[in-house]
Amino acid sequence: MDGKILYSTDTSVARITLNRPEKRNALDAELVAGLRQALAQSAQDGGVRVVVVTGAGKDFCAGADLAALQQLQDSGVVENLADARRLADLFLDMRRHPRPIVAVVRGRALAGGCGIATAADIVLAAESAQFGYPETKIGFVPAMVMAILRRSVGERRAFELLANGDTFPARTALEMGMINRVFTDEAFETETEAYIAQLAARSDSALALTKSLLYSIDGMPFAAALSAGVQTNALARLTDDCRRGLEQFLKKS
Image (cartoon, rainbow, N blue to C red; front, side, top):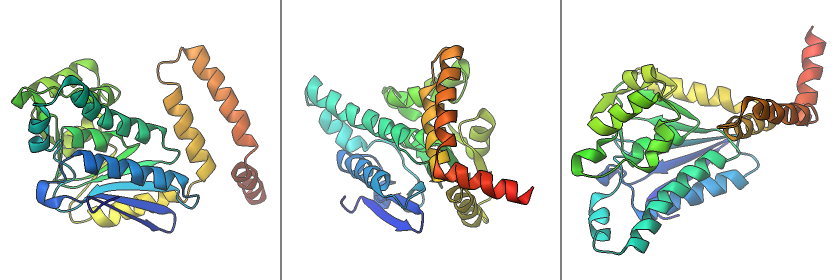
């Protein structure tokens, strides 16, 4: 990782910060590669229970670095496919990560930056935060982020957001089901830290199995999803966390 990504751990929480505040944390190849490396490191750290992704400065992430994108226009199809694939692979890394990823959003989360935020398992936003997919305004296509948005909101709403390219406030994103919580700017840091601490206190094995099952049943027929649930249910019963949890519950009752 270079200076474009900051990584630290605090007890059971890994914190990843997009660190290009002078560019509104715009995405270039180095930043995406550094973010993927930080995610891999947090996945291998047995002490980590929750991963937090945030942006340095006023904004979460303004999307692709347009100067870098312009340079790639003079390259061939292979180079442009490889560059687009890097962002798609990042989204896959987030979906396949064994632990919950929480995006903590201040300021603007636009285009690919909105994709990174909403690719997280949980999105916490300040009331003043802004979201949006402005790609069509410059003749571009919000392509990879579409797969994430389509799983969060209905088809008609998704098309409207992608086609119009307008930005919208955190409260609107919350109402549409794109994000999980909105906190006032004044209480944002306190509320997000409390939320993260509460999540980190949950069973590591239960969270990992829950995340894996939820995303694996996407697109499964109902019967297949139930069968996958049966297997996970049986596996969860054999974990140390479940054994301890049942013992503690029965002692209290």
